[in-house]
Image (cartoon, rainbow, N blue to C red; front, side, top):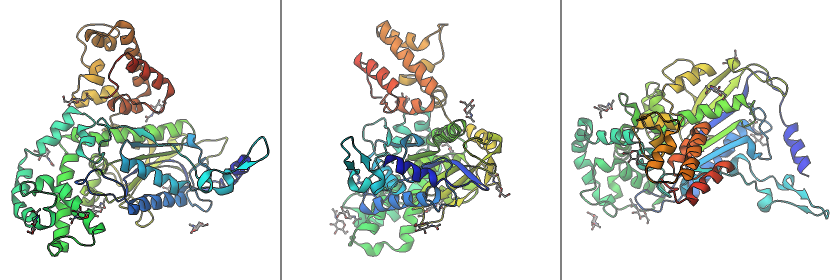
Length: 479
Ligand SMILES: *[C@@H]1O[C@H](CO)[C@@H](O)[C@H](O)[C@H]1NC(C)=O
Ligand SMILES: *[C@@H]1O[C@H](CO)[C@@H](O)[C@H](O)[C@H]1NC(C)=O
Ligand SMILES: *[C@@H]1O[C@H](CO)[C@@H](O)[C@H](O)[C@H]1NC(C)=O
Ligand SMILES: *[C@@H]1O[C@H](CO)[C@@H](O)[C@H](O)[C@H]1NC(C)=O
Ligand SMILES: *[C@@H]1O[C@H](CO)[C@@H](O)[C@H](O)[C@H]1NC(C)=O
Ligand SMILES: *[C@@H]1O[C@H](CO)[C@@H](O)[C@H](O)[C@H]1NC(C)=O
Ligand SMILES: *[C@@H]1O[C@H](CO)[C@@H](O)[C@H](O)[C@H]1NC(C)=O
Ligand SMILES: *[C@@H]1O[C@H](CO)[C@@H](O)[C@H](O)[C@H]1NC(C)=O
């Protein structure tokens, strides 16, 4: 029966004519949720529906038997977990969103999941052949942090220079002008929000969470106190002010370290797509769930605000951006295109895909929407931060995970172990850490993300062992 499923999947691989999609990377926002100002935040039924529908849209685009742009080599119906890399921070709403998305992408397969046992009985997976696809968690520095909080963008990621850069916005003239210009606007809204915000809190400093509270209420609350104050103009202004506030925290053209979240994402995208190419589409699907602020940081770095000022706005729930690896040369089991024949296309949809159009936009201030792979990779590399050393240097961090990358004081061949030994850790343990650091450098970005989040490794079993060796020796396993 398993074989039957496999045959169905293989049989539905199309004959490839014209343009072929060799792989994709999707970065996705979560669906509708409860307000930030009333923790714990949870996903709503509406939110689950949005991300499920989005997953279903991508299924019809890339997987379904009648798809016009199927992904080369990707199993159609039976999920093959080795073919995909799905990540999400440890955040309830983002994790749940990733699960619901995958339910839409690879729905239950009924009898295709059947397996015959030795005693000749057949067993079908629960829930109509439900498919279990792991979401490898990228944990946040602060445990169970709300990943949409600014802390995840900068504080949680612990990038010193980015935190300082974002904070400098609160000292800028633009900020103080906006704060003064909008005082009466926010205090006039107190009858609507005084159950949550005090008079002192009702101002531009809280532009995002005030917008968020009211936005959630307009979706869910049948009665809102003094709702007559919430005219269309007022609702629009609330959103515009929240957009200005968040954009300025996420990106600054003269101080690009502020957009560190976009820089790390850029490196993850290139690394995944490059792995797809070098592995001849063995892992053609990458999906990551993350915060709207990461979209903003990336948009700024990729100069999308020049395409439309709309890119300076907070993206709607369940928005997604897609990077497609495409080629016009034939790809088959025996011939795989050379990177010179491969291009990248960027697409974005504001809100649930399928309900809203997935549209291609030009990146990096160029006019072409289809960029040669080499051009794409080199443009991304201008702002990507792809390994621990580069991150530490850009962030100005010299302690913790960055200690081994701090400027060397004297010539030693293993500064990592040496500097940790200085803190009184016995030499054998220092050796383990030195090896860990080396391993991280080898594994590059993924390790960087894990390392920053406190060495909580879930994917590579070798690292898991190294990690437990380190924590067994009493080294803090959380940053
Ligand atoms: C593909 O098939 C499904 C159901 O089999 C149908 O709902 C959908 O409209 C079809 N899509 C296209 C693009 O033909
Ligand atoms: C980086 O440095 C900042 C500021 O000194 C600090 O708050 C943060 O925790 C450091 N991050 C890491 C990962 O060590
Ligand atoms: C909020 O404002 C309304 C209208 O001004 C007032 O009736 C209510 O008592 C206030 N609630 C709180 C908690 O201050
Ligand atoms: C919406 O309803 C929730 C739950 O009843 C309440 O806590 C919240 O304050 C309401 N929001 C507004 C803006 O009225
Ligand atoms: C960038 O940041 C600097 C320092 O905070 C500020 O003076 C400048 O106005 C900002 N530029 C933009 C375009 O936001
Ligand atoms: C892609 O991976 C190969 C092999 O690891 C490496 O040599 C190359 O530099 C990478 N290219 C990019 C653009 O990252
Ligand atoms: C997405 O929609 C929101 C309004 O819901 C808007 O503020 C934002 O600018 C839009 N972003 C893009 C890129 O269209
Ligand atoms: C493939 O060819 C078509 C038609 O010439 C062109 O529009 C498209 O951009 C090409 N795609 C790639 C990846 O080169």
